[in-house]
Amino acid sequence: MIRRNHTIKINLPGGIVSAGDLFSIVTAAEKARVIDVQFGTRQQIILKVADQYVQELTGSLQVSQIQFEVNSDRFPNIVSSYVTENVFGNSNWLSEGVYKDILDGFDYKPALKINIVDGDQTFVPFFTGNINFISAAAGNYWHLYIRFPKTTIIFRWKEIVYSQDIPRISKAIEEKIFLHKSVFFARNAADGNELYSMIQSAHHFVYGSVKEDLHLPDFTLPYYEGFNMYDNKSWLGIYRRDELFSLNFLKDACMICMQTKVGQLYTTPWKSLIIKGIEHADRKIWDYVLGKYRINVRHASNELNWQIEDNCEEGLNLKRYLIRQFDKEDVRTFGLCFAIKTQPNTGLFGSIIIRKLINESANQRKNLDRYDILYTKDFNPNSKDFILFRKNIEKENLGIYLVSLCKHFYELESKEELIVHAIYRQGALLDDSSLAPSITIFQCRHCLSVYDTLYGDEVNAIAPGTIFADIPAAYECPTCNAPKDDFVEIKKMSLIV
Image (cartoon, one colour):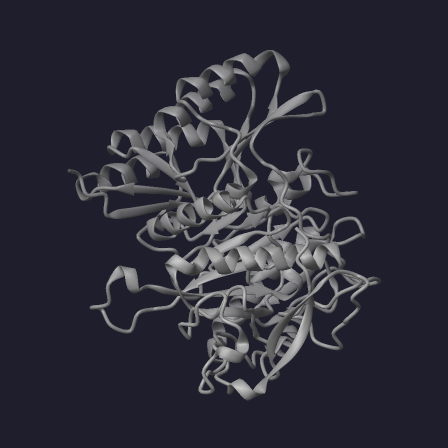
């Protein structure tokens, strides 16, 4: 058995790759006995290769002038929403030509994460970069948000930035942040105003005035699989359940693109592939190649709205397990997206986060792995304001709590103007029996965690169905360890799903 223990990462700036370049990459990978290609959350290509073939693969990539990294991620890919143009709506002024001009202006390899994103779409996340450009209402200008490395601190630039200055200001910001790492890296006290002053005193850029605050659209994840019509043509979205695209399929796809004058393919932050500009007459050949490789292009939306760390089999296995739980319960997840984090500081995008607790002892068995469940304020996946829902949960009980949290999300959606969410809304709680039947629950006055008889408390080994009065007096809040006496009785509306 060949051990594929080296990882080759190839950046595709903006998530764009020409059919010819992808064909060269796939051909080189094939010679090096690579079997599958993966796409990363930052729209890059990931290849796994064995020891004896690394030199052959890297040599072939160098001949094709394709830049790569071996077993490292020093230079994160530039993420863009270029893939969304025409297929998921159009901005008033932003076009593929504007994206290309900006991307062509980068004369260096960024070591910080840069996102260049249309403010009218929600397919590509806005704030997963360290340097985040979001299109403004004024033509050719962008809002700029800095998320300091290894923090959730976000600083809004005081002006909007001109398109042609994006590469230069990105380079200037990166240089200052790395020059002053002790000030800006992994520091919750990082001061955006200090960085702003440094840039202003050393550089001149074309700015515009911020005449109105940035208003991002409500999050919805469009269905991104299968054939879809636009402008008398079709685009094709391909998602793979195991995140693996076979080399043979990609070779055929590249050849079809080149033969039918489709110049580019696009990768997405959801690790899928999108091909635009398919003429109606060419649909049959695409149907043929999809059938040849038995590629399903109609997965349920429950399976598509997940972010998993790159090259993470553990995360994939947990996702499969949880999807089976969702299917069993027939859970609706539209409007939500989920992230599974098995390692700290991976910066994944999600409104609900399943975060693995790092085992302190190397002797702990796999079945003792435990997880925290968090969600973002208002279930907005672009928020960095995380709220703990449940902590220290065994894998076997994750599905129960996630289903509960999904139901609460729809409770909020359905009755937003009438009710206050018992788990994360602060303020006066409504108690109007004329609106809907009420259910008694108990809420910690300190951290707002909730004890619900229906679910019990897995952390404290309280079985589902146990009423609060029967819980031992020594009971403590699973989140903040407050005593039982600090829980108050409240009413919640019956769940509407």
